[in-house]
Length: 120
Image (tube, rainbow, N blue to C red):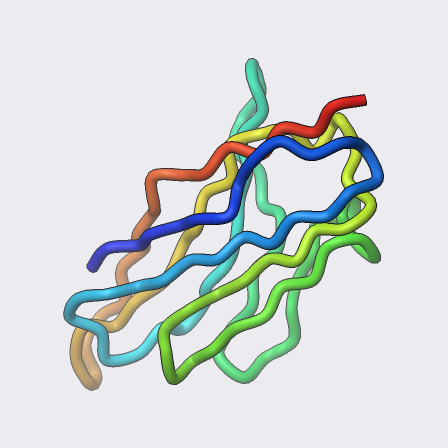
């Protein structure tokens, strides 16, 4: 399974960006899919995740500013980021919990990350 993220870039504070992530490979189902981020000198943290057909879960720091959505038919997840702040600067990683076959176990996969830089 491979995850390919895109959409990062440089934006001014208050601006918006939309991240996309596509999963490909041997996929029967994706149970949970979402985004994490890692800022320089900090640990990787959850940004937003969403289970298949379930409610999204957001970090307090992005609640109300970021919106996660999924396209289950295309095995994709998106993160619409608005009202960006300099503290949102980080490498954003896509994550997916994937079942490769029916009744099989689910494994966690990571994409390579996409850099988001918010200037003040």
